[in-house]
Image (cartoon, one colour):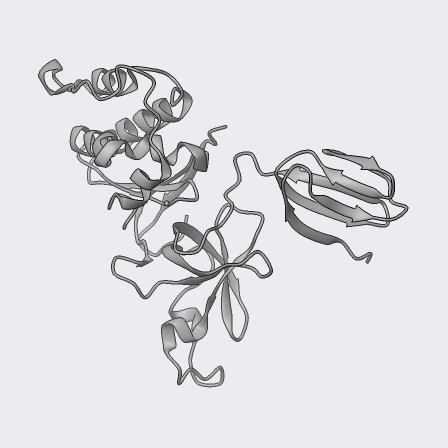
Length: 267
């Protein structure tokens, strides 16, 4: 198997040097192959390219994310967080410093298919993200409908001071858990309410760039006009700071539904 070198790049970064063939999202200047897109570069004997990160989450330390357990080794769990990087939860994060692979059963704590909400404890681009579930409100999510949106739409979904997501929750009688990686869990007792919330979330994602979005969402949810605030009569983009400070993130092109989390954590 040939060696493939990968790294995070932005436009203008040198992907590779030498007698390599430029493939996609790169160009060659002299002996250097240069990136033209933000993404993950790959270089091998076949050439060099950049895989764009559009719609894919790029981790940041202290982000709150929702992920799915893929498998585990003797020392950690591997977690899919909708990223080009595979995240990991060290066994010591759950079992403590006295963890022993010979005596502690990792499968009894987290198993393949379990959905979790976690915080990115360590990430510096030179290694895969390390997660923790030891903070308040983190851990396994037992039930709910799992959906995915573009991570860039998360601030708009939350809204100023949590206004958008609170409106959707109240109108649909649901609880919505949002990961900054674009993974969302919608839970509630009423299936119709869950469907209503999911449809409202998709409206926000598709129309996030438009004006008067809050008003249209409230009209879709049959929220009385008296409760419609003039929060975004202009095209109001919510910044990352507003998102990170809002406690709806258990606190930072739409896909389709990802499935239902059953009481045992499976889909």
